[in-house]
Amino acid sequence: MRSIKVAWAVVFCTLATFIFSGQASFAADAKAATNPRAVIQATVMELNQQLGQLKQGQALAGESLEQIINSSLLPKADLGFMLKQILGPEWRGITPQKQQELLVAFKARLVTTYSAILKNYNNQRIKVFPLRGGLAANTNKRDGMDTVNIKTMIFGGGQPLDVTFSMVKTTNGWKVFDVIASGVSVVQSFSSQFRPFVKQNGVDSLIEALKKPVSRS
Image 1 (cartoon, rainbow, N blue to C red):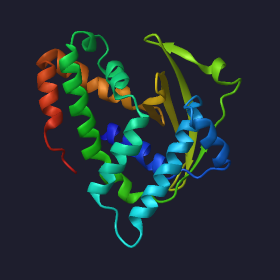
Image 2 (image 1 turned 90 degrees about the horizontal axis):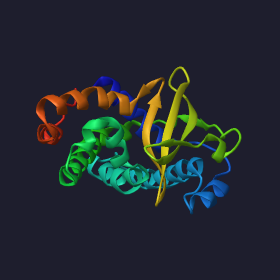
Image 3 (image 1 turned 45 degrees about the vertical axis):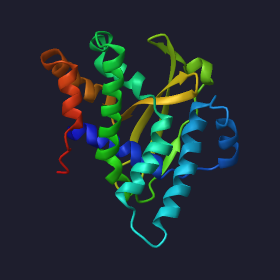
Image 4 (image 1 turned 90 degrees about the vertical axis):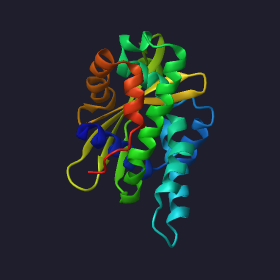
């Protein structure tokens, strides 16, 4: 689980600590959610405001951070598409009802495990690279959906870190479904554990495993 925790730590710390220029233009583009790069930028503006308000005169509380993750971060992710990539052919063998149960358990696990990460953000700087050739030239198909990779570089606290946000175009705009931090893919990391587990034990066992308390070590 360590590689997964590292990758998701990057996700939450990154989203909580963007420093960038041209905020107004990015926010305007993001209103229609047609620009995946702008979606990430606008999300950061919202998070910085919320975290700043919470931190005034007090430490960031886990409960409040979970609310922020639920209200501001997770709506920018497509966890259903993410689980589909994680489980691959195993996903197709799961009933819609069980898919929904798994999605709920997976979402809850992410929130409870990584809300503590936001307590320790420390103003890293991030550069979001433009899409060379424009959005259309960088769009690919994945399971019949338009996807694009947004490349970034994070500075602060050591060596610069390459982070790529993989996004999918949905009816509600562009959503994140994978994060690749220094070559470590969140989807691939979960997939290496979830697929064999489901094959051997079934989806019900995975749901129950995700519901169990997470070790903080």
